[in-house]
Length: 166
Image 1 (cartoon, rainbow, N blue to C red):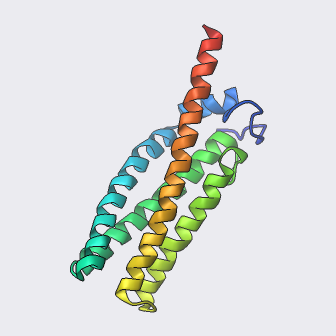
Image 2 (cartoon, rainbow, N blue to C red; image 1 turned 180 degrees about the horizontal axis):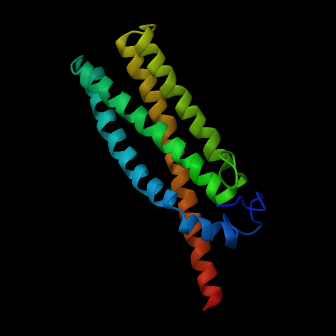
Image 3 (cartoon, rainbow, N blue to C red; image 1 turned 90 degrees about the vertical axis):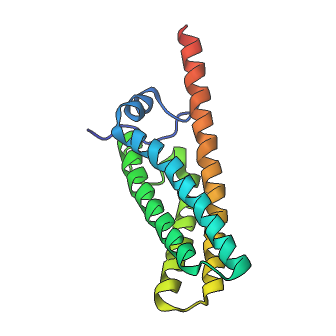
């Protein structure tokens, strides 16, 4: 696929017509559409396990494994999302249409990576590690809300375009 000629955000919507076509034709849209809800399910399970550990002191291993799983899924969705942005917008990250979502995604990744570092080095106590994970999860919720809002905006733009054509 050749790179798009324009990287600028369209003046009246999330996607230009060409970007919408690329978005709809790439397999990476489906990949993102499958990974995002999967990541959310992993997140919900992990939150429950982390809160259980913090509340009872039990289940450290289960909570730890769930955080690692969430981190692996996060890294996967970030890499595939960067590929999706390249196909649709012509750049791997920080396309104008998703700039702030990518900024917040990097904060989420930084906190998850900090958690892995703390786990690996033992630099933080087990409860402190869990609090880092919860901080990462709080930012993840904000980031997920950003993407849901953008998905809604894209649908509204698509519906408006279809009404104009009708």
